Amino acid sequence: MAAELQNAASDKEPRITLFVVLTCMVAGSGGLLFGYDLGISGGVTSMDSFLSKFFPEILANMKKDRNVSNYCKFNSQLLMAFTSSLYISGFFASLLASPVTRRFGRRSSMLFGAVLFLAGAGLSGAGFNLLTVILGRILFGASIGFTNQVRLIELKTRSIPLYISEMAPPKYRGAMNGFFEICISIGLLLANVINYGTQKIKAGWGWRLSLALAAIPASFLLIGALFLPETPSCIIHRNGDSQKASRVLQKIRGTADVHDELNSLISAAADASRAASEHPLRRLVRRNYRPHIVMAFLLPAFRQFTGINFITFYAPVMFRTIGFKESASLMSAGMTRLTATICTLATMAVVDKLGRRKFFLLGGTQMIIALAMVGGIMASKLGDQGAMGYGYAYLVLALLCIYVVGFSWSWGLLPWLVASEIFPLEIRSTGQSIFVASDFFFGAWIAQSMLSILCYMKFGVFFLFGGFVVLMSLFVFWFLPETKELPLEEMGRVWEDHWFWKRFVELDEEKGNNKNVQIA
Image 1 (tube, rainbow, N blue to C red):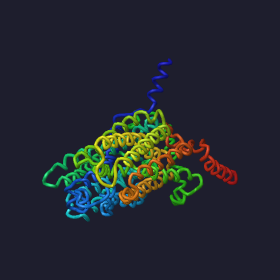
Image 2: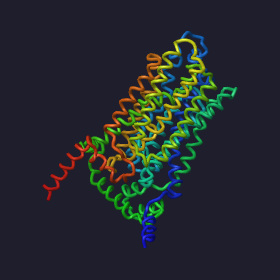
Image 3: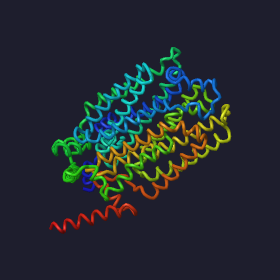
């Protein structure tokens, strides 16, 4: 009898089905778009063939034709504009993506983003002049603003992270959503490998091939998204078709007993519909949503101020600065990305068991130590002229790998995951858009300013980033609640139980209760 009851319970338990795995793989492949473009731009801008065509003055600096400081050889506003244009266009696209996602669904945003990325790949690969290359980057950014919007932005509302969060069982949501970050890491790794190969093309068109190959992950997402179903949450919220939502739930959960989860989704959609008469931005500034808006703004900002995009964008550039040749600098950048990919995979396996906060704090501590040591070595061993000794250069490479490992299992994966979890349905799309827009805004600022800051602060830039990581780790310790294994529909409990944020939620509940008494 006990065995029968146990078997019955296990039949009702949501599990990871082959269908949901394939669905999340196709959706998560959108991360390849983001990762590939981040990685490809940094490698391309360190190639002599690319620099000679678009930035000859930088190539002259690298060839030591001018007496320029090691820290200032790549200090070019046009080069930084090439990098930051992706984030600037992504910022505006993420703001537009929220109403598009609400009206047409998560899947439609993914399809539109894939089409934009294909167009950007063609324009960048053609690259007749600097303007066409930058226009290609702008299309890349717009694509990422949509695909990473429906959910977390959510890049972006990242349509993709949001899509994955709504499809995955609560127990495995962290691991499934982590697949998006894995795809970003794989995209970055592939970009570094491709750059390493294409820079060896003697005819000088290797950079064109690197940029044009972005069409491959875009095609995969475009074709795959044509066969993706909408999420049950989106079906109910847009169409009110509970029967269709139930069929999708049964298919992705691998069980016929989805009554409780379906009722939770219907209830959440009803609450969102009652609030629909109010403008989403006006609703978002309510006091009880104060915790959500703070996290939507600060988590992506903190993520950028870890310095990771400075390392990602300019790793090949930085390795050339400290003495590596063109080929060795690209290989070194690839090594750091391979390390990050492996560690992100490891984090996915345990994040739903150990929780989000522990990884934030562990990774933050690791990053602080690594950044401080890199800054110290560069302060003592790299002057304005001449190269660093190879022994110290490889030590810097090892420390940056340690830094990237810390980032991978903390600020790499977790901000997107937390953002995909914390927003209630009635503000989810708007909240995700704010998250993505904030990420793009600060990403654009980092991309457009960091080479100038490196030139001005020199080795001090690593101490600057280390100080930021100290502050954000303290913020996590005091203000970020744990969200592991909670259903999205019950996420409000984490704010009600938090020592600081509960005062905002409790105040709103008291107002709501008083209003209900008056109506009664």
